[in-house]
Length: 409
Image (cartoon, rainbow, N blue to C red; front, side, top):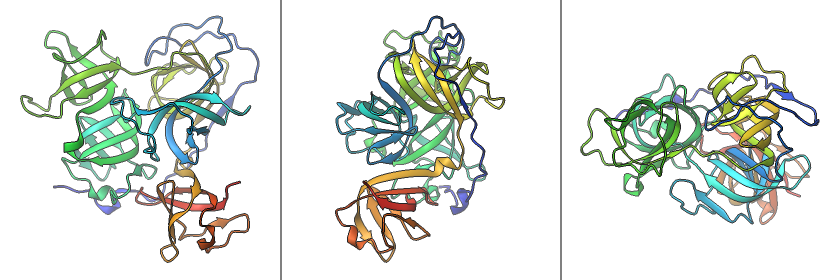
């Protein structure tokens, strides 16, 4: 079977300058985007100041508390940490690069700390690898193009994507672009088919045939005659989450049988502090667009001229009637996507290899590291002490390369 070469990963990315747009803290009277998933049109009149809670969605970039979209969430009191599709309890099983939705309550005036009330883990794609393009750094899984980059975290033990072969079952976290039916992967995990009850994907419906009860997402043809729709009215361009039977029997032409179809979830409550990381999935205008299906109103801001479908952004503001009223938009700097932060106590210290484990993540300190708070290169005296590590994703995607180590006060 075909395998990816060890040169699959480029060693460096060109850094883009982030574009940050802000508006003052004045009361906003806005007209802008509304509607459902990936609806960037509509109107919003007489908006309120929003609710009192906190909401963030994005990839996990740190532990100690969970860091998502730059917000540090204390998860110790979260009532629920579960997989959004299966309902499986994932407490203690969160990993770097997993995409999550977190509801909580702000703890700081700047909005960078919050208590998590609930955490939902949502991988975007689970299924067999159908093709590999090493030169383009892409895979095809269930008819969807998966883009792999040096910022994609790989599960520990995967030994790089050179170990991935056609037919392997992969679970992929990342940011979906329904316009191109592609996924920018933030985490890759290999699964055993015996442990998989259903394949899954998210994307926009195309070529809906209500007579034959079929549609397509990307290059995948899907039959839904026996699927659980729970009253959902299917239509072209609707973004849905689909669970598929793993069985190939009775299927032809690469088609799959849907067992469950749900509309992509949106946050409906008003929220005072919201931060959303994702790709631009729809544009009505430069002030009315959607990120990950969430309508964004940026009518009080200078619109970035290079905002486009598929561009990865982080938007900060408040949610009102399902619309994110933006006060800050950042086109994500690819260099910053490398950055991770871990807090905890050291285990598995190997002073010869210069590695240790922190919050279940292997950390390398075999390259120049800035040691703070009087720390020395020898970490053997830190047993039981809480430390903080800042670093980047190491080549290969399974470890964090430390750039700074300090005492966690």
